[in-house]
Image (cartoon, rainbow, N blue to C red):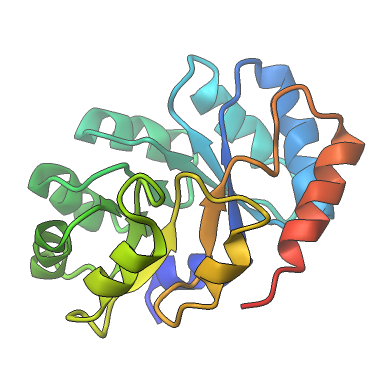
Length: 203
């Protein structure tokens, strides 16, 4: 089992987190971990993201990674902040090679067969299917997965508590990514309950 596959098999849902205020980071991580979601993806979409990763790593049981990593500079910054895995919205050879050199578990985004083939050429076999719903949903992933039996996926983008079970029922899907478990403005109690509901999804 590859290191990123171990991360993907930890829980059925990886929360995709956009954090505007670093003060929110640790309470958010505590609520999600208490609810059973221990793998946390902090997207590098805000100035607070790197400090949020540092803060969340203080929470016992949290496995904190960086998402929306698009180039080598961001990769280095995320690793420097302590990110334990890296997620990107797409896959370029420079980013893929840099991630592999670093040894960090890496989950690149793919949306078509060419993306998958580029990843396989780099020695990768686990991918984020993104944007999952906009890229064709479950029929598209089934068609993409058919020629690549060794490949495993984490669909992200448009996944909800209601449709997550359909995705998780697919053999090549190890987990899904979702932002619904951590809505902006949600209280720790609300987020912990959302996390419990997500952690209980069958797969």
